[in-house]
Amino acid sequence: MTAGRMRGWLILLGMGCGLGLLYAVDPSAHMLWPCPVHALTGLSCAGCGMTRAAHALLHGHVAEAVRFNVLCIIVVPSVAVAVVRSSMYRVKGMTAPALSLPRWLEVCGIVVVVTYMIARNIV
Image 1 (cartoon, rainbow, N blue to C red):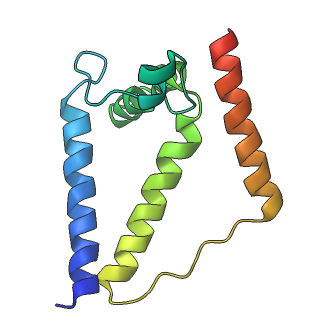
Image 2 (image 1 turned 30 degrees about the vertical axis):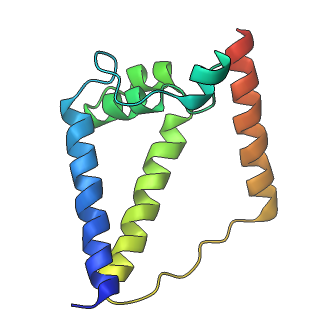
C-alpha cells in the first residue's frame, strides 16, 4: 500500500473516530475544547456552537443544530463531503482535482461569515 493510500485510510479512520466521539459525548455537557476567540475576547466567533450543532445533526436534531449555529447547515455537510472526497481519491491512489469556487462565491462566503459573527455578538 502506498503512502497516499495509507494517508487516505487514516484520514477516513480519524474522521470516523472523531464523529463517533462527537456522537457519544454531548459537547453541551462536556466541553471538548474551548474556543480561542471566545477565551481571549469574550466574543462568539462564527464557529462558536458548531461542535454542539454537529452533535445535534448527528442525532438528527436539525432545529437544535440551527439554534446552536445556523451556519452548520452549510458548513458541516460541506466539510464532510470535501474530506471524504479527498480521502477516497487518496485511497484509490489518485490525486483529487482541486476544487475551485467562483470568486464571487468566495467573497459572498466571507461576507456571510463576518456578518454572522458581528450580528451574533450584537443581538
